[in-house]
Image (cartoon, helix red, strand yellow):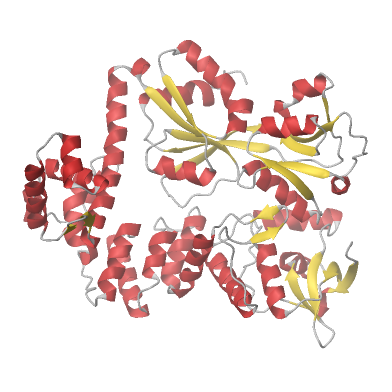
Length: 556
């Protein structure tokens, strides 16, 4: 049933109580203001009526403010007859679609929503929270609870987390969400002490370090001093082996006599034992006798003055101290693997390899021709393509398991060392079978038929979902696929209207096998980006990027 749109006096609409989302006079706000000046308000606000006859804004706070600034007396609205808890849930879900949201805003919004769900006797689904049949919030259930924990941070620590989004405008010190969650369990006084230490050292703790801080605080052993003692015994041991991009950190750490007692080979043995959870298995893998491995680990524990393993008849497992050591050494191992590949490439770049994170539709429509051209010039260089979600690819890139990522916007990352550079655009379109006789002139006409879309995690899906929501469309998503080939095949079978990259179907349209819908709406272009860690490319990867991505003479 179509909801009625009515015009309401702006002065009769109050802001939503404790609205967690700030209204910033940023570029998006100015663009919205210009659009309203030229075209009026195209998307109605959502309000609910209060007992005194006035109204309360649920979605549309920015539009209301622009009306107030420009002397617009009335605003088109859809009136919802819903309870307090339902209003909170709708307010949160509708505002989470903004382009840029601070972690503090998400934290407070998710807390309000969870409280409302609890009042209703409901909980989040395992995959998080769904907005509608055509849109799903990217945050998983566990990530949502992490955001809620951030509400327990003191404002100064919360600002460090927000600065991961505002880093272009603010100071360089930022803190990722996971370490911030660990610090949220500290008392306010301990959080103040950690913040002072962060300012003194000009470093924020990693996730592993923050877990150690929490562990010390819960045992009433947190005593920070001007040498960042939260991690003194571990930091002095491990950072000396992170010899690549973390070398500069060593300068800030006082090296004690303990350093001289650690043998690098014993750390290598420790990693193998930790990975296999067995002295015997590590012995078989390393071709070292089991007594020698056991003796080496006992010596390492003695040198570090900590217990690294729980030993039992059924096997071994890592202690909390062992887990800390393992996490640092695992990161060091990843870095050294990258170093090894880089050194091998120096000797013979033509015999090396490149590992690229990229989704299949970008391979087909953007990358394949470039790979073909590159292989013609460098036939012996091996290229491996890894297809996974954007989040997974960024994690793999940070772990140095990928050389770089080619992906479409939007791309969000909590890592400050990762750069995102636009490198191209792809047109998108709706397609239908030539047997489909429905007239499609506007976006609204898409409500007449089944729609076939990419899976929810894809950037293509997120982009079109945003358009559906902005235009208040009730879309029936009949099929979802992870590859364009399946979407195209389903359209050819007349199972619905598909949304794809136009380059992928031009030959089918030209051949009259399918048709492109001539909809009176400017569909978004898919922005393609290269995502990489600066100064981390191997020689072969750098060769590919320079010859195929950034070469101005390279034909598209």
